Amino acid sequence: MQPASKLLTLILLIFMGTELTQVLPANPEESWQVYSSAQDSEGRCVCTVVAPQQSMCSRDARTKQLRQLLEKVQNMTQSIQVLDQRTQRDLQYVEKMEVQLRGLETKFRQVEENHKQNIAKQYKAIKAKMEELRPLIPVLEEYKADAKLVLQFKEEVQNLTSVLSELQEEMGAYDYEELHNRVSNLEERLRACMQKLACGKLTGISDPITIKTSGSRFGSWMTDPLAPEGDTRVWYMDGYHNNRFVREYGSMQEFMTTENFTSHRLPHPWSGTGQVVYNGSIYFNKFQSHVIIKYDFRTSSISKSRQLDYAGFNNAYHYAWGGHSDIDLMVDEGGLWAVYATNQNAGNIVISKLNPNTLQIIKSWTTNHPKRSAGESFMICGTLYVTNGYSGGTKVYYAYSTNSSTYEYIDIAFQNKYSHISMLDYNPRDRALYAWNNGHQVLYNVTLFHVIRSEEL
Image (cartoon, rainbow, N blue to C red; front, side, top):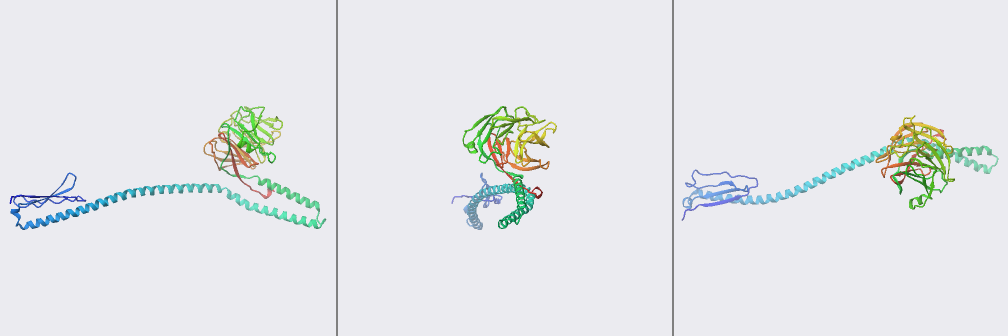
């Protein structure tokens, strides 16, 4: 037999990178080579076994050991290959699970963030609702006392009804004059009660209702709170200066759906947007003056004019939005008012109650609120309410009561839908706010709480 050496190369794919220890005799030609290990270029473990010449080791006892060792190495190779296949499969599974877990983690994070945001929104909404309801607590306490007054009225009415029934049966048993006085007294008290019920403290303003989109950025529109029943004519004035034409629409429906109107030419141009129609006449500030004019639509003539002494004009003390809004005329349940500012009051708001026939000042109140810092203002039941601005986020934040000559800071939400309020007035008949908002004619309903005290009846 030719001498030969047998080279067996086993490539072991070992998952954990285990290396075999190298065992070599001093001289490979003198005896048999057991095995050695190394790594190939891809980092895999390569095991090499060198068998000696068969003539030398065919009867060597260690040949059997080497053969057994080779079998063990082959078995190990197969086991490692199986392990590697499983490991690769498991690795793919783990990688897939890792992607899914990362996706779940992202979703859980999003859910957690959304949950926090929802909780924050819910908390904010609840807090806002509590702030809205808090001022109602003392009012509700007073309502308990008011309920007793209503019961007293009910009992008196029942008593008078019983007396009248008996009087029909027994004429002369009661003094008619005395009975008439009792009925008249009760009627007056009921009328006073109803008058008080028409007034109250502002506690809320509804979302805006857009009636029409027309005109320029500035203007005013209104209805007459003292118009006869069924008269819903709308009065429309576009712009804040150098204009003297007033449009009259036949009804609110016509104003909303048509452009059919009658035009009235005033003898003088108006200044600002503080005009008001009251009992068939329009009251306005003459342009570049502190003169107030009462113009009667029925006679198409000026029925009265008067200077508002010391009142600033021509953009001296305008609202925050400007527009020659120095003098603002308005009405409420109590009548005609003028809101303006004077040098004597350091540019702060002055409130004057006017006689609608003579335009004379009946009484004035000086406030501590700068006119230029007010966005707009309106009167309800003798209280002047002032907004904190005219653009962007707006709220009613200041109130001055002419009934008690006191003021307070309040917080009533007011949605400024079109971002620029240039006119805001209250109509006591409609119990609504009329607004000119950036070329949109808008209505707001108001919520009033009524407090009746026995000494007022």
